[in-house]
Length: 256
Image (cartoon, rainbow, N blue to C red; front, top):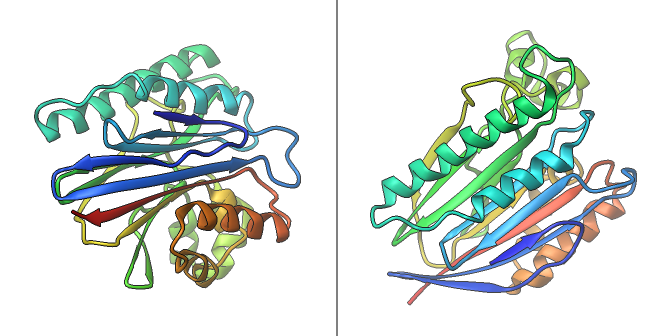
């Protein structure tokens, strides 16, 4: 198991029925922020991976992201896959209540909050569980697809007449509509899909895709090495100015 905060990365592998899963993660505070509020978890022995991004502009985002990662790291796989997915959701609900309590309740103006994305592998399937605007992408046959849906107000702005490009640059559109530590019960979404040989899953904080286009990301992921790809994605975001913390966690499925 590898918990990543303020840099660092470690290659790890999971043997899970039809596939071997290999992963590598890195995080960086970026060029502007004076500390890192992102955290990630590689738990290949349990078959799941996590990225949490302390909500920007709020107090103690690093407390929130680390509390999420620390609690999820304690989970052990259940015999039944659906039961483990429920464990993950229940754990996030528990952390959500703890963060709300730490901040002084739902009515307080002080938030201790974080986004979260969880990728769970089981045989030839994966499940994504998330809240907020951190993302999980699938890179398959050199095509990048976003598996998660951002929990922010971008779609509201699109319906009001903005283009997606305009909306994504508008500060008000970036306000989160869901995150851990804001309201109870916590709203999470779940998405499942089949795994194919060679699939690469990118779990990342918004500090990455704010700086890079889908083409930028795809070009980097064409490399064979997860370690080099993760490092190159971080370096490219930093070269663009990286106004936020940047976290990259890559997971690759190889058929046995």
